[in-house]
Image 1: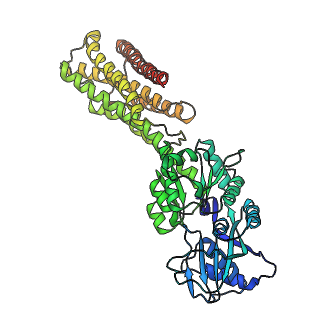
Image 2 (image 1 turned 60 degrees about the vertical axis):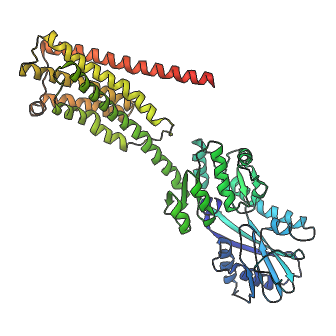
Image 3 (image 1 turned 30 degrees about the vertical axis):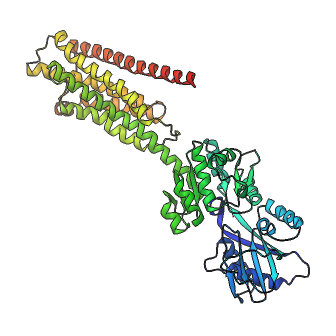
Length: 506
């Protein structure tokens, strides 16, 4: 929504321009004050009241009133001698007798400068009996003045819209104002970059959602939009498969905010609008939206990294447990081993990765990607540890029924598992440039340093391999790394082939 989002909430009365040189300007301004002096005046009404109050005007005689309506696009009063009407020029002129093309041309000229233009019309005589119950504009009414109001464009609007444009987000402006006025503001904030924004009067929009969806593909700005049309616009964009966010501050934006995937309200919005919105910009600054999107992207992208880390551990833990049950071999490592390894390759790194800045655009398929990485990675780790548990006793002539030999086997398996954990962390943290690469190296170094510290080594039941034990450890690490690369690489190739097959079908 334009007002209060692209522009500042406040509107300013510029001037009142009489259409007849002999018109009584004081009577016109008094009527304008009374027309705006409703129970809950909108932004334009508040601007008019503030501007005329400075000129010494106050409430006058009002015998009957027709409040402003978004559907009618005008309001009206009867002051005892005449009926005064104020509203959208093109709407009012279409309901009056006479040719007022020159007035509409003047309105367009003012609107092209971004002015909000209202028309005041007068009809002498008494108001009809059904004036308030069935309001209608008398066709014999005559235009007497134009009211020009202006809005201040937010200083951050252009840069914010440019950021969204660069991110592949298409922004559309919808407003109840004249489409020419809204189009002029869209041009000033470079809504469509170097391209001229295409604007349209919402009264010409089709009611059918499918037809509306087709029309919206070629429209950037909509003016004279009704509240129910704002909702229909969101529905039509959904029909085209778009994810839609709606920003607004008025009660008339509430339906669209509720229909959108993400409703964003300004801090000074109507209570009903704030209640419906999922996000409220407390200080009403439009420029916070890129930060909101960036934070959402950070959460989603980092959650994917963290989930991959933990799911790999879940997969290999389950498979190793299953392998132990089926083959009746001793469990490959101790709980204290997994505490040491998990803390250095999963727990603390996951905390860092979760808080790290990440502006990667969200891509659908979160669960598929996590599973696609975790399954082959977990299988590779489980296969490597089980293979080590089966082969090392024979190679090293260990008797697993002997406590000392079993302790050595488990300690070597812990070393192999730690190396694989660092390898998994390195793949999850990619690209390994800057702090990411340093983080992986730091945890690898901390793990190795811990083994060198006697107290840590004893507490976590680790060993420093030497001689033939060192050789066997290096061989098992090489085998484990090879198995990991083969499993992960095979899964990636199969995934790429599957994706290529889908592309060919399309």
